Length: 298
Image 1 (cartoon, one colour):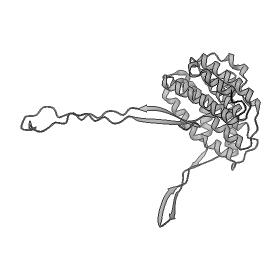
Image 2 (cartoon, helix red, strand yellow):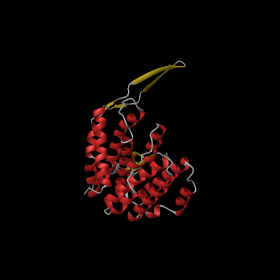
Image 3 (cartoon, helix red, strand yellow):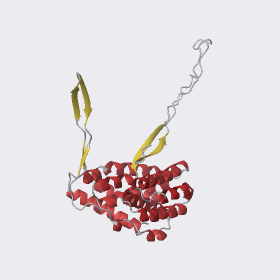
Image 4 (cartoon, one colour):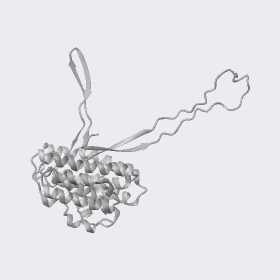
């Protein structure tokens, strides 16, 4: 499993096609020595996967791009006790998970311990504390001097929670948690960019999040029987509308002659973004994130 990207799966059961034998008829129509196929053909189960990256993927990218750590961008752990509804707890669990990954990526070791504690406390309130064990706490404490190890451990803890929720039928909680984690990583990114430059890798990576957001919302749509998920989809509508303004260019066909062979292929599709579109996305992300962390959502 790629530990920087998680594929959430939802099984789509295809309708069975029954090949039943013909009813009625005489012996003249179906000879007794002719075998009758009474087997049932069932189409295989088709499983759909939703690609949602873990927060540490984006933070590793922005660190490599020369961005500086900014403590003011993360949600203070002192805010934790005001999240009392299951919705706010799940969303802020995702946000604190993003903050945990951010502190680990930038080697803020003491903050990493602090945010790991916040994540564990919310996990307990959500009824998923058993997804953690003391060995994971020990791993963090024993690797405080190694940024790479901390990033790996925080990634492991994220996927441990994801696996636990999937295996225990907590898809609704997982949807909200993933939404919070994605939102926090985007909030930190857009507020770390000082100047818009359409050609910068950070802006290009941000534009590519349009597809990720579509995947996230499609995943949440699987749980629209839950009012908290429905309201969260509505909460994200402003961000989706802002991303929907981006223009996506389909990949172009290519051909290359190599060793007497003509190889056909296509280039990757690209998403273009203007300064105005970037500001609209930044505003929508910042407004929703601050509403969630300040507990202003219904």
